[in-house]
Image (cartoon, rainbow, N blue to C red):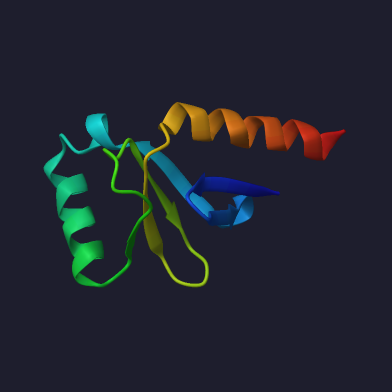
Length: 88
């Protein structure tokens, strides 16, 4: 199944490593260092000019970090609904 991350970006759910709330996780110096490193490597895709609410790490085709204006809770709920649809 696929998950819409914002704008025209859709990823396959099997490629998602994690969905994170940007406000609560960016408190950690390790998360900030990870995001800085990903940006330096050109692995960050910002999906909107709006205030970012979450980031999604995928591993296809390479490790990519998508900065999304959609909350992590909403993205997680969408994944849960997709899982339920797939099991019917």
